[in-house]
Length: 384
Ligand SMILES: CC(C)(COP(=O)(O)OP(=O)(O)OC[C@H]1O[C@@H](n2cnc3c(N)ncnc32)[C@H](O)[C@@H]1OP(=O)(O)O)[C@@H](O)C(=O)NCCC(=O)NCCS
Image (cartoon, rainbow, N blue to C red):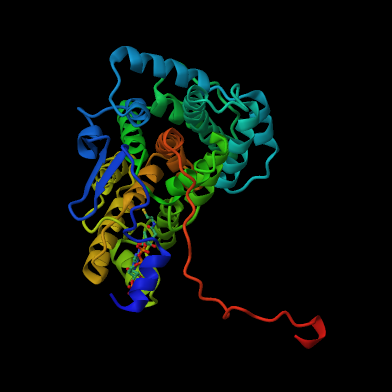
């Protein structure tokens, strides 16, 4: 490796194994993603796959639930989806703006109102994980509804996690296809090994701080455009090209961007050298939901962009590329895309934090020092 490549790899901790985990396995060369040994393609199958709630149980317990265990978890999540009144009041008082900023602030606030606040036993931490998973869904959907001028809706305990999110957001009980497509998208986003936000959460957890603090840190890391923020950037790019512009214009736009050495959001990955297995499912949804919504142009443009980026840079779409047009065709505002990533990833974050707490050691790496030579003399201020 040249020293420039080495420095770059070091800066990004590329291929560094920073711990052991029994939660998620990725083989970037073969395009494999599995949760606790279950292949993502089996979990995310439209008909034979599992629900997001089953994936939560899987990530937290490292086995799939029985029917009775799933029923218990669904009851706990339904209770957690009812947000504490002070959180709803605070939500109304925040200035309009970035959904991730609101999510970060309100998640921190949820810590104050948690019935286990101040308790850090494994049982209390597990209850917090379940509660946060229920709460984040209501929080993001209600924020989205209020941003569009609507009022908060009380969650319906008869609805599953995916349907309830869409109901709280739109005020309408969603159709089965939209529900299952959104459910599968939650399954696909639920965990991804030691991605940036999960690493941030584990580093925080390793100090033995409280669970809410670890999640606030993770939300901050997810917000960045190199991580969860990429899905919103993809849709902004498609809209910038224009819904009536056609696929030729999409191609020109992307070629021009590449010519200027700009990155195309939604492409490339630190670990996958093949297609991101999550993109395989999201591409299909982008097409089918786009067609149903009478908006086939987003998929058509995306497909052409994919061909150009593959041909020019040999890069594949990642999880954020086709999820953007899928969410747009579901009628969801762009500002919610990254918060929606958190609605799902909360399952993985909390699973990793609980695992970190189980067998903890402070995470404290070193740097290579490249600053001024040691020792420097401290000159009096007038001589500097
Ligand atoms: C995901 C990502 C951050 C991984 O970064 P990384 O492993 O550090 O890879 P690098 O940024 O060093 O990229 C390696 C090379 O591929 C190029 N590249 C990577 N992603 C690219 C993209 N999306 N568009 C165009 N070129 C890209 C880089 O310019 C670089 O080229 P160079 O070696 O000629 O300088 C990066 O691919 C990216 O920024 N993608 C866009 C944002 C995104 O979609 N994020 C969501 C990730 S799930």
